[in-house]
Length: 158
Image 1 (cartoon, one colour):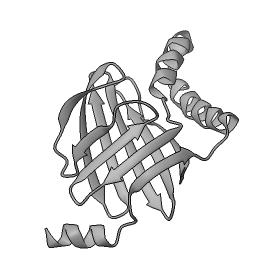
Image 2: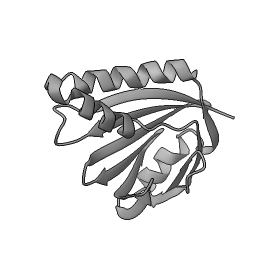
Image 3: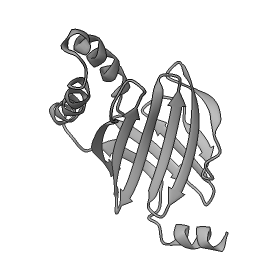
């Protein structure tokens, strides 16, 4: 437990509202690049179907309200209900955007990794805190994908 508290003492504070620091065009280009890379793996006959599913999986938030204590984590995407979990990696089943998912969270220093597992695949949100910014790298993995679809967006503390 001493190691955990020492790591948290040296970590950047995590509390507040963080807003997307990119224009809508920049976000669209980032997500299109991620989707294009994933769709390229599929035969041309099913690329349209795959694109639609991946566009749905490429959900992003305009703002996050984030809170972390020594042992708990809460994040709220836009006006959705907050996701609250202990930071010890224990998973719980919750409803996210109308789907039942298993959510777990772990923290190491200035990085918080939130994993959401559903029947269709796994989404990992990796929040990297640097000064008053968050770099959010999202990785979406599925049995249908040869490699995860990934993208990174930058958020600035308000």
